[in-house]
Image 1 (tube, rainbow, N blue to C red):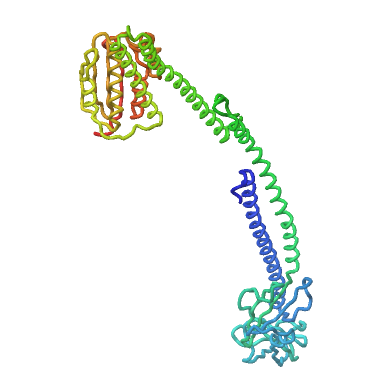
Image 2 (cartoon, one colour):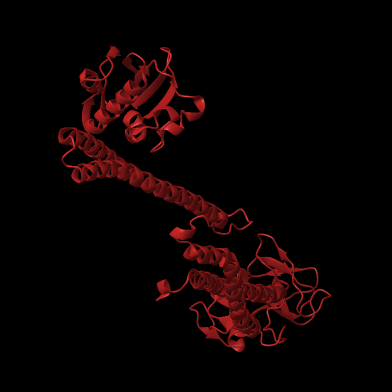
Length: 499
């Protein structure tokens, strides 16, 4: 279904879909990051509250906290098995009370049951000029402590922290941290603080609400922007398409509009104009070719018809053997012309037929040995082997020899050499030569310079065109220069593919 849509619609759908996916993933990531940050902040706050309470314990006040630092914040207590304890159970566990009878001031009293590490939390009567809750000093390594009078005092050892505060699972709606303590009797308890996640939930709801409206709005804006931008970008393409649809064989000289921006569309329009220029040139060449071919074919047909009509009109005075000879000559010329046209047609199609290894020196030897109106001399003929169509290569050599024979004054000279991976064939005559202005034009079809305008002297003007077409079809070329013998030199070069 999407493939049936235009490029503008496909690009809009693709960009919008990609943006929607990316923004949705980004929104989920933002919510997750915000949630983690808020939870971390809440956990840090709970650890701060717990540390403040623990500072009270280390300071000698192991009481159950009664003041709530923040709304919704609560303390909890766990025994060594992880079971929850009530504040009273916690108080009884942590206040392991002992009794000491103190003697008059300055005397040393003691008992082996009193521990000697950690502060003693004193409860009861005034001791050593202090008040209830003051610590009694302990003599190191003696198991003794000093009291100020004979009052009975009670004491307990402060709990000892075992490890750092850790998170505790108290449900999904709160964040809880707890600290483990070891009591004087070897048992362990955990004191914790839990804080609600209501603020976190409210913050996440606000973020989700913003993203719920922002993501669709941004997606719609991207879709609209993409639709407008692609429409503007493809506007030159529509103009090119409309102009191309209007171009036909009758107006191949028209060109598509080229946008000013130097981008891919500019390159496309320029390429299409170059293609149209080549098509126009080819079309003009084909029209000229058809016109020239029609004219050349009409001449021998008309000449044969005229001679036959005259002979039939005056049969008693007609020299029929001479008439038949003249008509046969015209038909031979017509046959050669048809063969040349067929050869050009095959070459225009880009094919040279069946290829094989060809000894070009043998081709030159055979063609130079054919009967000619003037002598054909082979000055040099080195062995040259290449891959090609032997029939077309033979036609090339024959056309060049015949052309030189028609224009030379005395003879034609051939030379075939090989230099590295290139073979060179020179065909020289000592005729009038070719003016520099005409040296490229003579290879065009049906082109004859003024001296060879007559069909009896210059042919149809296709021989050199066929020679160049054959050479280029085999990866080479043919050019015309001045000959050291005074006339024209036609030089053919071929790449040697076989060593």
